[in-house]
Length: 320
Image (cartoon, rainbow, N blue to C red):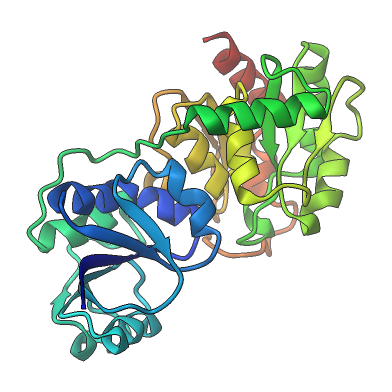
């Protein structure tokens, strides 16, 4: 048995970032332990930015002394049980209590309270002290240099680069309209800023729509970068403008200027932690619906946020 610790982080990028303070508390409480992060392959790209000393990514099943489960699925508890971990810490969910040696009842409700505090509740119930409750990410000089090099290869000035993440993998309900982004990016471009669109290959057309009115230097990087490269670009750019998404949490956690647009989700539950964050939220009567797709004519929670509001928030952050 490896005399170490295995951490099962959440499955979504934004949730992993919100769980970072809780994971950091585990790391700080076990300074002499070998700690592994277990989960989806993209975690290996993210891990260098998570500011978790002595941790490594692990894809295969290896027995550990302790396992901490930030995923609430039965499958995660079954994986920890099958791996033979002597201690298995997690919340009581999906009839999995018998698979855990330490099954806790959540004191907070994810439907109404901030996810970051929900994850911290787990480690506090496990008897681990928490000294830092906010996200604190880190980009190495190597990653910063790589991001700058990537921008320059695409003729983007790092001092004028702004990252835009107009997609939303969770669903269209969280996505601000491409037509509105097009006006915002036109105005920002006219002010001398150079937009870089980040997203998946499936979101590439959305990126093209957002750049439709922009005449200055731009780069639609959707589908052309790895997660590591996207994080490097965020780290070395001057601002990130995005919907409620994982990259919003990354940017804010890195201390970058960040403008986040909320509609279907509630910032009181998933707002990023950072010193240079502006959040735009003009809820409709149906907000927050927490649905993947909007079923109300006109997508009112997003239409309530005028493009001029977003532009002004970006310019204010860029001048700060």
